[in-house]
Structures are given as structure tokens and as C-alpha cells.
Image: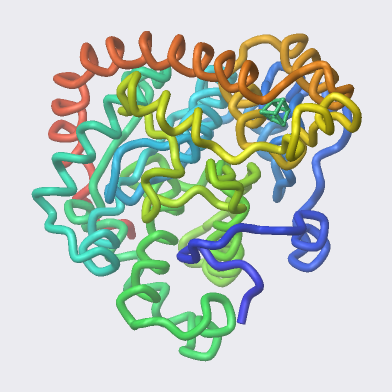
Length: 372
Ligand code: SF4
């Protein structure tokens, strides 16, 4: 069974091992192409597959696509925000890039027992978040899997390329519905390469590192369908998983009190942040003598995600390490920072809701065509 698993609630302890074991390429230090990407500068991007090839093609002016998706089983949390921000970063960087955002409502139906109607309601919120974060709707296709015949057709074709033992090797023992959901996700990844969307092209998939099994499967499928469908293996770029506020390696929708969502009220944020686990010492005396451990601290992570200013992050880090910073005051500052972001985001999201709704409805008719 694979050491990482996209449906697990536990996180990843050792990214270096992950990179070595699965042949992910580490990102180079001081990579000129990504110096304007705050997640890269802050060490939160852990590796890639063929990102350099994608960037070279995009810079050469070729038509390229950026694709990722969401299971609409809940509102945006920090993890979904990072994926969204990565997609939007590449959409803005390359004017010849089209963004595809898949709403995995079929997966939510089988994995969470959630109706398609409920998924649509949540998807409108999710897409409003995307617009509020800066997605350019004119160069985007947002669609629901349940309305996308193309991706189901592709999943059907791909089901001929895999055996049960191959899928068990990648994902462990699962219900057939989840294996099929994985093939539908492969369908999502190749949607931009189908004839109705302009044919084969470089596609970049920004995702959390736990989603690499889907990318490996998709790249294998591309190799198998190089000749008949002309598929090009997708590129990917991985970010670290977001820690929970209780210090677990992966923030999970299944534990709402330990995750921050983009819909939290000011009082919810206060309660969550002020109760968060920290990398602080047991007493103030020890903290002053030994310094804190920002590497272990989910409050420090909030500065990494929400601050626009690298110098501020360095300041928090060194003040913590040297014992000049105490956790109570630090949490107050983190709360102010996060609430400042959320205040703006809430009003942007409200303003984006009707556009999100019409984008979902408008896109529905565009993805019903057969892929071959
Ligand atoms: Fe975390 Fe801040 Fe405490 Fe350091 S001072 S351990 S960064 S909460």
C-alpha cells in the first residue's frame, strides 16, 4: 500500500522521504521562476513533477491549463485556500493559461453520502471564495463532475488500463466507488487535453503533497494513451499540508474546532487561535531562557499563510527562537493578522456569490461533449 493516501486524515511526517520514495523532484533553491511566489519563498512548496517543462511551454506562449479541484463537502479552509492561491498565481503569471476547477460532487456523494443539491450549494460558496481570492472568471472553467460527461467517459476508458491490484497498490483497499472516483479525477486532469477544449496541451496541477498518488496514476495513464488520445503527462507542484491548530500534521474537515475556515466569524477565530497548541515552553521563565519552537507551532504557521511581509515572518521567528516573544501576545498578533485578511475576504466573497452561481450554471453546458 502507498505510504501516502489522498483520503487519509493523517498528515505527512517526512517530506524528504516522500520525495525520495516516489521520485518527486525537489524544487531548486533560489528558483528564479518562483521568487514571486510567497509559498515558495517561505519553504511551503515541497516538490514538483515536470514543473520546469510546464513553465518553459507557458513562457513560449503555448496554450496551457492549470487544473485542480475540490470535494464540496465543506467550506474553504486554509488548505483549500493554498491550492486556490497556487492556481490563481499561475493563472495570473501566464496570460495564455486557462484555469479549470473541478467540483468533485460525485466523490462527495459516494465518500460522504452528500446529495448533489447540497454539493451545488457548497460549490457556490467555494467558487465565490475562488473569485474573492483573485481567480479571473474570463479565463476559467468551473464545472461539476456530475454534469461532465467528458470526465466520466474518460474514466470509463481508463478503467480498461488498471487492475484491482494496481489500484490497491496505489490507494490501499477501498470500495470500488473510490477507485472509480480516482479514475474520474484522472478524467478531470485530462479534460483540458480533450478535443472540445483544444486538444493535447501542458497541464499543471497544484495540490497538497498527499494527492501525489492521483498524479502518478494520471501520468501512467497519459503514457498509455500517448498515441490514441495524444495525452501529455500532467505536471504538478506540491505544497505542504496545513497543520491543525492542535498540532496534528494535517488539518481536517472532520475536526472543525482545530481548523480555520474562510467563513469563520471574528469570535470563532478568536476562540480557535487563542486555544491553539503552540511551540512555546511550559513556563514563561523557560520560554525566556530557551526560546520557543516556531517549527512546531501552528500559530507561527498563520503568519506564514497570511502575512504579506517576509520581514514580519523573520521577525516573529527570531523573536520566538530567542525567547523575546511570548505566546499570549503572539496569538493576539496572529489573530489580528488573520482577522484583517478575513474582513476583506468576507465582503469580497459576498460580492462574488451571484457571479459564482452563474459561472457554475454557465459552465455546465460546456462539458457534456464526448472526449474522442
Ligand atoms: Fe508559537 Fe508565537 Fe509561541 Fe513562538 S511565541 S511558540 S511562534 S505562539
